[in-house]
Image (cartoon, rainbow, N blue to C red; front, side):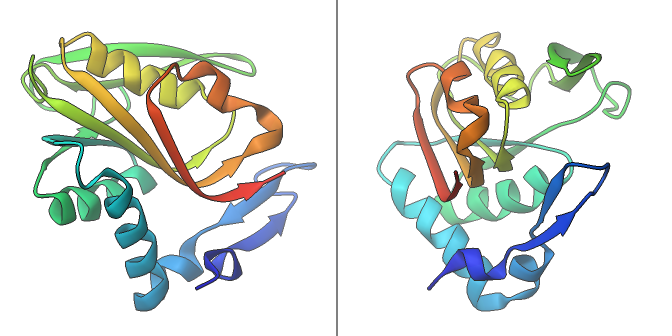
Length: 171
């Protein structure tokens, strides 16, 4: 199955010069979505994953489905102030300034084996922040998985030695 056929390009969104990769046609397709989840799950099936971490909002969609498929727990990473319990935070650079993600302090612990999931790997800043959140707990990041990787932005170079799986590559 050609997963790329389910991705719609939206030019000049959210601003001029950006080509937004719209994944909603893939999410709307039972076959396309199932194929994406099954393919990523197969890549990590033998890695002993105990937790899957995904950032809002699209990381929740893929992360929850993968956690279920892998028999692991799901951990949401959210923008500051969105989680109701004690949190830990990781900051990352944006084009103009910084942003941050938080997760509950007790969501991941030493000894957990973690898969980090998101829809797109672009510059790598958000993914690196998620890996930093996990590392701060003493857990092991065994891999990172993405539906789409924008190869021309070289985000992979910020992610260390963990296994990286991307189903669609955009040169």
